Length: 286
Image (cartoon, helix red, strand yellow):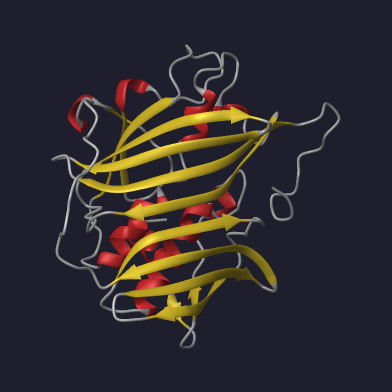
């Protein structure tokens, strides 16, 4: 799949006033688990919300993923308008595939206003994209570079702190603010579980869906500024908790000059398969 095709995936089509349809990826047969990433569904819902409430910017987006969605079938995003006033619009997206509910959430959109006050958390002191190694994550159109080689699937890699910094950009994104916000959101589900695994020797991403059952259960994003996903963005993924089969990460996204673009949290699952388990069907279970 070319990167233009991926923009096409995020750019959902209106079916009626409240429902949007997302096309599927054309290379689903190449994937070990041919399921839609939860962060992709969140990105598609952000675009749908922006189309539903033109002239307003998504400032909060939260979604819970309760059932995997297959890459081979279209997704339908229904937006229930909970409120719409002079400043804010609140929408509740539900994402279904065939008759099954896959994800549900809440979106807050703002007409925006001049600053009354302003401050932001400072960008971490981290090597830039030119000092970071490129990494192929099979995400067409994305240029991804990890600081200090911290992202690895190898369970025998040296342990480190539960933090992974990544530089990310999508070079040829169209001039559409909702697509740029969706491109930022689409990467929020890719690294937080790896950050949670990093302090634990003998545990690595390569074990996911083999000896470890992993999944993203929920993502919440606050957007603090207009996003330009075609420029370098620094994602700081910091896992603050792992236990009871769950992980939690508190993360931030900065533009290269230091502006805080977004803050997000991710709740994930990391659980051992039983010794006699059979590989779960990715279309029917997490």
